[in-house]
Length: 345
Figure 1 (cartoon, rainbow, N blue to C red):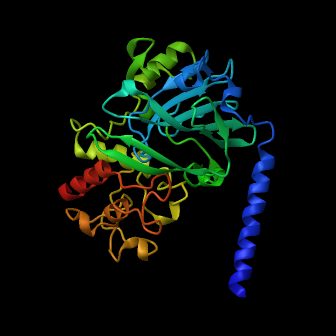
Figure 2 (figure 1 turned 30 degrees about the vertical axis):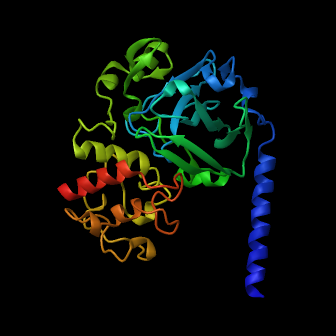
Figure 3 (figure 1 turned 120 degrees about the vertical axis):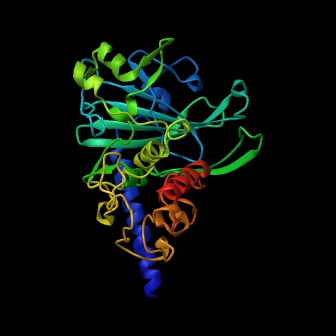
């Protein structure tokens, strides 16, 4: 009887949360097309005027999904520069992230299937997340605050067919990763991530330099010259330490930092943490349990199989795996990177 009461209470709480979230979406368009972010056929994701494409040096792993990112700034507003945190985008900013899979990674010309578009909108009350799920016809995407599981199939670069049950997060799960000091915040667009040369208007240009030229980023010459820069963790021409620093910063440090949801763990994996103890070296976990795999330390230099960090990254068990959300499969390349890095410590 007690168990039944708990189940009923839990179901009521879920209904209340959904009701409150539904009512908080008043005024938010039901269809992605209503925003007029893109020109012509929506699935081409061709940006309209004042929609700015951007790329990151290192991307958060999401079950091997590819991503296209855009920013819509409110007219007449600019972005203050800072060298350490995510840029402080003005109220009214919309960050637009599209998740897709090519039908065949070896043949991009065959097209792609867009799964979802996540919007982060900077409202007067703070940042709010809105997931839009694309229809099978790829003509539009519909707001779905409760999330969804979507079967996806594609052929990878090795010619192997991959089947995924792709998880679109619900609106509350978004807060699990996008929370800084108790408030929602973007994760990716920081100076260290945006300090990247990419093709803009047909030319190779640095994004920070271009944003300064456009007058949308408040950054001085010395700040531009000294801006931090992460590497691409998949770039094997870079050192193991640089690649690992970038990987852990984008995939783990949004929680594992002194202001994040995992601050009580004492494990801080942000790029500028130089304290090897809080970075995990021979550090005991705050809470031992099944998630630790009966291992003693977060990182044991030279011994990846004895390191909790490696153990949790290499799992898909919901009670063990890290990150806890955003993936349903092991990131093989990421796990191998961390294995090699720990082995070489």
